[in-house]
Length: 37
Length: 502
Image (tube, rainbow over all chains, first blue to last red; front, side):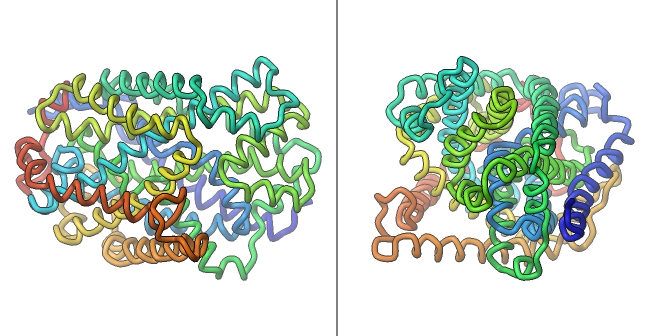
């Protein structure tokens, strides 16, 4: 089992990096020109 | 030019295409062979927190500034500095440009090394071989290495010659492919018996390490060498972007995407290392440098790992894809200034290809020369980040933010935090990092640190760096005069000029 310290570290790492990446990707996709040629 | 016409003609056809090229530019060997081992050496979770913060206070703000300069001036690095802050500062852009051409020259060699590991892995030739002898044979005086190096740089030149639409198509395939391979590798690694030890180490946070200046300096270094502020990459790509595309959102996507891919690479590597070898041995592996870790330690590990044959092949492919994706963007940094002086895109690509073949040949034939270039270029690139901050401060930080970055069409607006980062935090941390690496370099050779003929001495970085600056200063007037017409009138972004629409 992972220690609570490592679990907290993993959550922080994923939220800071993957979380912001996913949020900004969603924001970018809302733009009409995302797939537009 | 109407917006519709500009959409058709501008370098990138869709925002997705631009984002893939931006992500491709920053995702390279630094994500796969550097990040996992630097994270492991510097305390895992504590390092990751520092590295995430460094991205937002150093990497993203400087890259936003770079993109703004490129789009505002519609010129490669020398012309961009000329038009943005004045003719006598073109040399700053020239320094960025020469340094990045140097980076292109030696960086291509990585693909030549990895390709041979891939072929030997597929054919089974490498199985049981002494990896140290094998790597020394590949990296020193090997004609095959040189041939693959020459072929790779030629393919990169051809890709750039075909134009930004073609680069966009290539990166639309390479980046999702890279992501898929890394996810497969990460799933395989975390399912190994004992992988939890690696994950535990990867994410554990310690107060001492979180407060350690060294951990923070390594985190900033990782951002500087992976995301690439100050390399002129995004400044050059911005030349081809539409006037209304959102710089800040695109850069945040690129920066967080680069970090996200590094995190997966960490999942792909560290659990496997810590699962298969005892802790002390694992730490020895990650401390053995990029090349020692990848081509000796990991190559040995793949042979004892369950399913290691497939894992090895996928790992080598991921490295080739990552390096090539960034290679085509860095190659373009050298091409754009030549297009500015009136050369055709084809002629410019051939010229940069010849320069890279000449500059890169010693690195292809000698590991020691490769290491020398890697060290020197890494140091000089820090100057590029400082020059970019200086240019924006001289132009006016608030004006740059309110008139050029936060345009009405944006989906994402940059706050005053950006002013603070560009004026104080970014340059301040880069200067501290510069001093820290200088002190480190002196400590490696306390008696002979000044010697320019040592592989990674301070002396060699100073002498070669000074030479690049000197050449840029001597030819400043000539380069400034020949860098094409001035499009920047300080009244918004000009359209993409005809010469860059070839």
